[in-house]
Image (cartoon, rainbow, N blue to C red; front, side, top):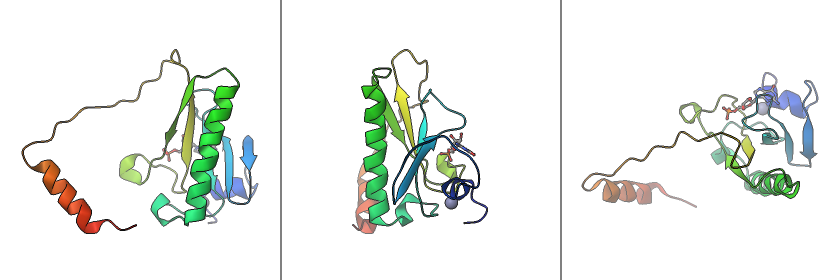
Length: 138
Ligand code: 5GP
Ligand code: ZN
């Protein structure tokens, strides 16, 4: 897609610090990292939503993302990693081209996800599961 910044990185029209590339995916350093090593893994085809991405791209995306996280741990500079994908503007997706964030972590890096802890009321769980089952397809 001509005006997509990540497609431009795939096409070498704008520079990026690339870590890995194969026939389906490309991994490069995030320009504004949460931790040093924060990497983005993207499909080499333009698609906004993970749900619309062909299965072989989805599979390669998760496989390469976990291998990149494992590689950072192997350097012995990190103890673990987060895999994080924002799907949709409401979920925090800014760049409309699927991307997995790989965030290498150590306990002392000072970053905390802003998690919260809600509680379900009355029959909310039963309603939620019923609605989910009505729409779920593999
Ligand atoms: P999102 O919020 O869409 O999940 O994350 C988009 C990510 O893309 C952000 O972490 C941002 O720093 C990164 N990003 C945006 N533009 C560029 C760019 O031109 N180059 C690189 N390497 N990363 C970018
Ligand atoms: Zn794109």
